[in-house]
Length: 78
Image (cartoon, rainbow, N blue to C red; front, side, top):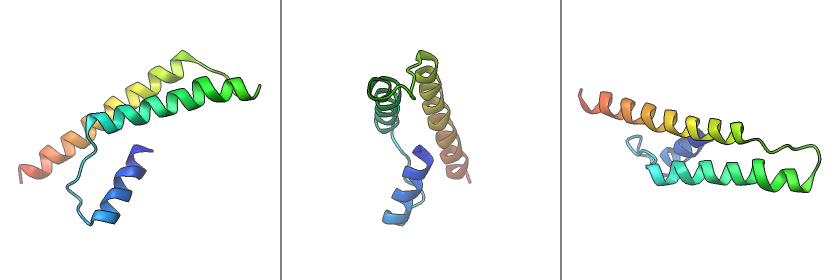
């Protein structure tokens, strides 16, 4: 989801050097955690809340941040 957001920003701003900051990535992690692991399980029996999913959302956010930072650093060193 963060990749789609980033590509949307690139498309709108026409600037491929823009990166999502840590606050934006953490906001996405919190939003998805609350929506899918807290709110939806209360609304329907089809959904289940799981702390391990929250941990995976967080880990995905960290990996996304590190990969975009690594890519930016590699592009900047050229």
